[in-house]
Length: 386
Image (cartoon, rainbow, N blue to C red; front, side):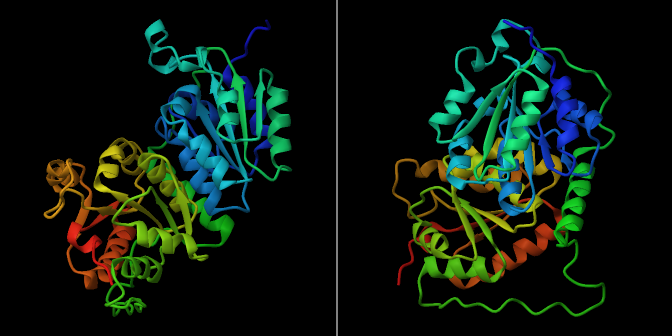
């Protein structure tokens, strides 16, 4: 068996072919090594474990004309393997996922108890089982370069597993924090795509406020149509979700709306990660999840959105609110306390007429503060029918 090479050998080779690609990197030395190999404002560095490929997918869906590369690790992929199926379903042909498999969590130690599942589970086989057709395993830098070049001619996403040893190249720390890096990345996307993503103020100081968006919601149309209109009329153009009883009607309408990309996901945390990438690429994203899905996304929000400073509208069904008769209802009362502890600004909405202004005000606040905002329709409101 040939001796495995170090990760930096592959990154140095990749830098020669990924000159203009948007690149999302893993934590620790993957980030610093890639910065050394290809310093660029087109790099988003040090994204948390389990979020790298989700962010990259969001960016790729937001900017389909631009090649996007995820530099992930075996540990990150095993954190949430459902992202592989989501990539296959989304069909982002401009996305290439590079998974460096060193067989362990090397940045935190080399003891047997931190070995990766990659020692037992073949990532390439797993990716194919999830529906990805273009999957490769390489052990030489020139083979990685060939796969990346081929991916650009392939009308489907590509995943490349790169077998590497545990050696790290100590090339110095990143010269910026993650929020500065976010600004650099977004400004690069803005210039390349000719769009505006950062909108720190809705109006010039002293000017009259702009007119509020006109609502197409019918007060008698029921909750689903009202929520759909509130999102659409406020410019939401990218939505993720899981099956949710209170949101099912609105989700059905969103799936039929050709002006909004609705992406089903298997885990709420994966979804909010994809939303973060979509915002970085210029979309205005929302996650339609119940509050128990919010609980499942705490890590993803704190590790990702707060580290980089990224807004996402969390439209959160308030399960466990007064009137809910399910067995888990008692847990719902912790929702406002959890949001306050996470420093997620939020608003509970009990009147359908308040949905439109709530979404409007949430995005105005997020444009200024660059953090997530949660809107919680009450249990009674989400059950409002025609």
